[in-house]
Image (cartoon, rainbow, N blue to C red; front, top):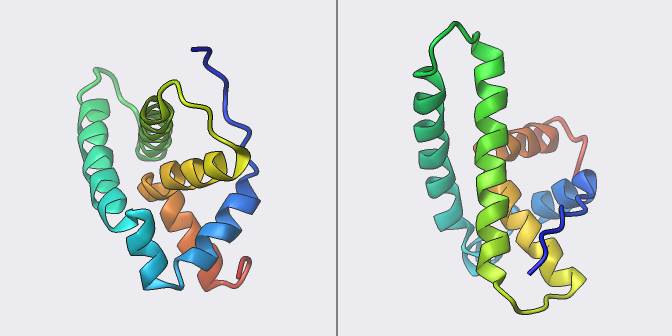
Length: 120
């Protein structure tokens, strides 16, 4: 099995997630009602670990590092979950969306962009 970095069309993913968030049935179907709380717990745990690193890391870099680590963890989980089976582009797109939704900071960015009507 060869690792390949995902091709993320960020705004395409953000727009698709924004549309999906309007429908409670879609949220339940995709399992996001489970992904989001687990992502928040992972974020809190990772933030605590990053805070324990000796030295003074200021507030903003600490959150950037935490967001990056949680996102990498979610993408790794999605990659491992598919195992050796081949998935097509539509399933890969949905898998990438799951990882984005599971990362609290990215989900918050999507909600803010939706609120200020940058994405619909």
